[in-house]
Length: 236
Ligand code: UDP
Image (cartoon, rainbow, N blue to C red; front, side, top):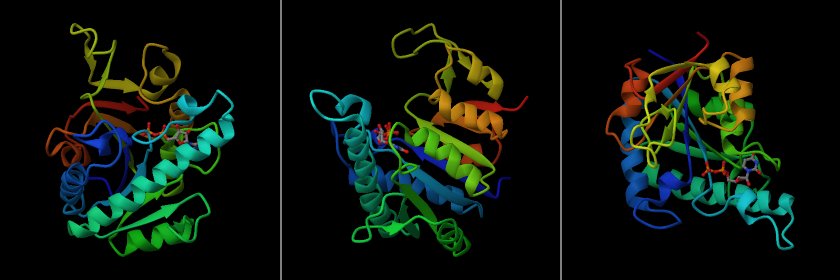
């Protein structure tokens, strides 16, 4: 059993039944899944994405500078964190949001000690603002945060139930890998789990990752118990 896990949630997971934005019903469903992890005495850190509102790479251009587009993307993650933390607390999952972007008025600043202090009080820590710098994604921020907070495992909760040799939504014959090594995930161009910067950081520090489907009920808790769900990406 793991002691502390980091769950990477993309913004898209929060839009639920909508085309974009925040679906409180979906957020409450996620809160319940996270509760199944904390009920096993495992601490949870969440790195939240912002793609349901804005992604820097898509927004940049036509006069919008990449740096500012990325700042908008990071603001999007903060909007998610604010709403998600409220829904978690309303769902009896004690949580606090912290951000890597300076914005005292709306969210507490992330600091290492503050995050640990919340975890010690059995609160889920939801981190927004990625790493706080442009040209990065929340996947890279998730790996960095997992290392910083000594998480035993990263769970990347996605739309599909693991890593495939091809996009399963387009190619029905695509096959799923149940295990991969971090080295394979770095080197092979057909394996698109996270951006390569994120996976390279994980490989450098032997940080295990499980990629699994968010919407399969009980999946996250099963991953935390060490059961075979999705694709496990480990040292060997
Ligand atoms: N972003 C950034 N630095 C970071 C993390 C995120 O500049 O450390 C920006 C980037 O523009 C990114 C956006 O925030 O596209 C939203 O994050 P991401 O695309 O990772 O969200 P997700 O796809 O997980 O919802």
